[in-house]
Amino acid sequence: MRLSGDQLLEHCLGMPGAWRDEPWEGDVVAKVGDKIFAFLGGEAVGIKCGANRDEADELVSAYPDDVSKMAYIGRSGWNTVRLGGAVPDDEILELVDASYTTVVAKLPKSRRPPSAT
Image (cartoon, rainbow, N blue to C red; front, top):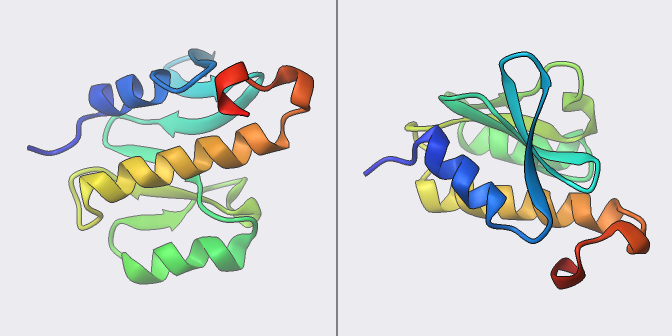
């Protein structure tokens, strides 16, 4: 069974303090606090994959057909990961978890979800 966009959204929303938003019409994102940790686009997910572009490029190198630098924010370590491709579902879920953890760590302590600190 391959991971669907709905399953990925459900996974995201299961994290402490996570909530669904649609900041641009038709574009669903998962946020914690006021920060996005996953861009959910049906057949792909946009996630923070490193502190910088060099770290994020490691994933692009490992899966060149299924992972690419995100437009506009890719220079900050964000990648687009295609669902149903070579990246295993469990690795995609781990990458989403890591994106969440990275974003939570950047929130002021007063705005972090209690069980995520």
